[in-house]
Amino acid sequence: MGKAYFKAGFLERARVSFVQVLSEHPRTPAALHYLILVYEQLQQFDQALEVSESLLELQPQSHPIQTYLKCRIILVDPKLTVDERCQQLCTIYRETLSLGYLIFDYLFTHRSVLAWEIFDHSLANRLSDVLWRLSEEKIDLAIISRNAYLCELFTARGALELAQNSSVFELDTLIALRKCTNSKATLQFEYGCGECKQISFIPFHRCPHCHTIDTVSPILTLSKEHFEENNSFQ
Ligand SMILES: [Zn+2]
Image (cartoon, rainbow, N blue to C red; front, side, top):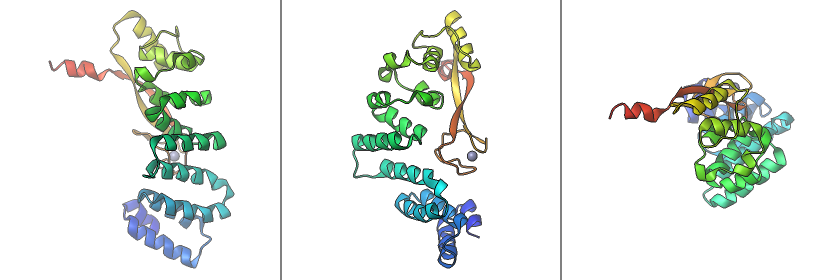
């Protein structure tokens, strides 16, 4: 019943239903799992973290949920400054090497120098969209030029000339276009889940379909640059 309420968006009814199930059968992983999801949607991350303690006892492999919830709490805690948030997220990344997309997205948005300082090169592909949108003044040429994929990505973007080609079809096409024309092509991104393979139009930290955490991966597609369409109205 709670599941049906949750899927229909009746979060308060779903919460009451799962709390009732758990009061009778406290060791029910599915009810704990859904109660966490309900609290997340209600933005009550502290309660979600509390419930996750019980889930962790039953399913020790569910520890990424706690890391994820701690990150969400840091992001919404009004007592923290942006610098404190960044420092705490850095610490979580160093300790767990997980939630890389969430953490670096926040760091690149708010403190790009710090983001480059602790940049994990194994995340270069997964952060393609975040890096693609990075403003010019946040670019760290020294770090980019040491990473073959980043050289290709930023050459394709058009700001730099660091690669002649790419093994990624979309980047290779853009690099070739930049060389010969005043290119009107760019990249657009969709987001695939590494677990259930469903695709979303916006990035996610917990898959909206299968609810797995930290499985987001951007999918590159070629598209026309929007300003060109706007100019056609003038
Ligand atoms: Zn999924």
